[in-house]
Structure formats: structure tokens, C-alpha cells
Length: 256
Image (cartoon, rainbow, N blue to C red; front, side, top):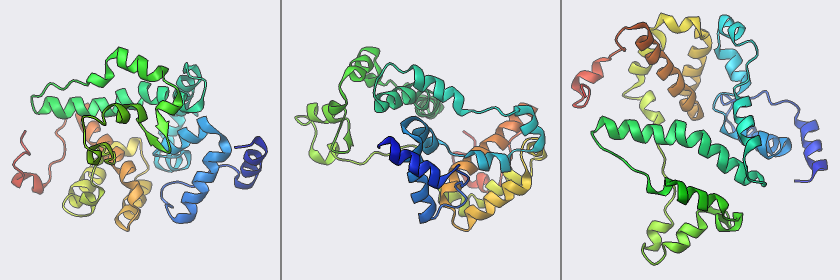
């Protein structure tokens, strides 16, 4: 995008103050325009952020905000992006994902899920020679006509049917509707029966997130997942047992 257009958008949009609580069409459009205005690096970081600064300031307790003393979590990501060996923004984003999202999220989930079921999982495409080769490729062999993995798809055409090669990507997404149905009481109990989290979070703000989600704010499921996991882990830190709800008694895998 031309610098003059970016500057005009920044001037028009100002500082981003919205968050995922207002996830309507106009907010989505404004969000995309804002990401275009701030450039590739900041736009990508903004797109990947689950809890915007405005939402964090509402959720964090006064004591926690005082302890954080203005700490900006995205600075770590900015430093990794800046030292990426690629020259173009897309290669820098790939590098950032490799160093953060892949190791701290995707591979972590695979490892935990597999080990919990006594499985040893290997990822051959992450052999360091394959990664180095893939990173050295020009962008045109990675992304073409809006589709990723161009060279890999081309190489596998002889071995896989088109129906497989053209499948949409499927990730590890927690079904949000569960927290509106069979896991609703379980989620509420975890969030609001643990007094420890009030040291770190504003419970009125948490209640507001929960209410908005129950009323249809589907994008807040990612925020709620973090809050629920934080509440569960705080019990572990304190040495007490996690909250168990009555639904678990009838679940065959509840004791595993």
C-alpha cells in the first residue's frame, strides 16, 4: 500500500480502541483497514492478538497492571520479526510463526494430545534440512493465487487426488458452542468459584465477557479459553484440585 494512503488511513482511524467484544461487520472492516494502515509487521501482530490492549486493561486487576508497569507483550514478537533473515514481510511473518506459534502452540498441543494417549508423534516436514530448503524458496513457490504450499501441492499431484490436495486447513479449534451448552455450568464454575483469580483479574470484566459470549459474541471463545485455563492452572499452582463438575462423572474419559 502506498505510504500516502497508509498515512491517510492512520489519520482517519486513529488509535485502535475496539476489541473483540464488538465483533460486528463495521468493526471487522475497521480492523482490516487499521491493519493495512499500520503496515505489515504491526498489522500482522494486531491480527494475531487475541486480547487487544483495551480488553487487557479492562480484564487485568489494578494490582496486576501496577506490577506489569506498562509491559508490552508484543515487543518480544517485534524483536523476532526484526531479526528475521527474510527481506520481504511475508518471509518475516513465516519466521515469526516458526519461532513462536509453531513451537509454543501447534507442536505443544500435538505433543500433549499424543503423549496423553501413549503415542510418539514425529513431524518429518520439520526436519531442519526441509525447513531450511522451504525458507530459501522464493515467495512465488510458497504462495500463488492466494493459496499456500504451492510447491508441495505441485510435487504431490502425482501421489494424491485433487480432493485431498484442495482440502481446507483444519486446526485445533475448541468448539465454542460447548461453553453455551453442556459445558456452560462447568465453565462458569471454573471462572467464578476460584477466588484466587481476583488477585489478577477484574471479575466484573470477566462476567461481562462471559455474558457477551453467551449472548452470541462467538469471537470471545478464545479469550474465555485463556481465562478458564488460567483459573485451572492457578489451582494447580496453589496445590488444590481443579474444579470438577457433575457432567464429568458420566464421561468415560474423565478419569484418564
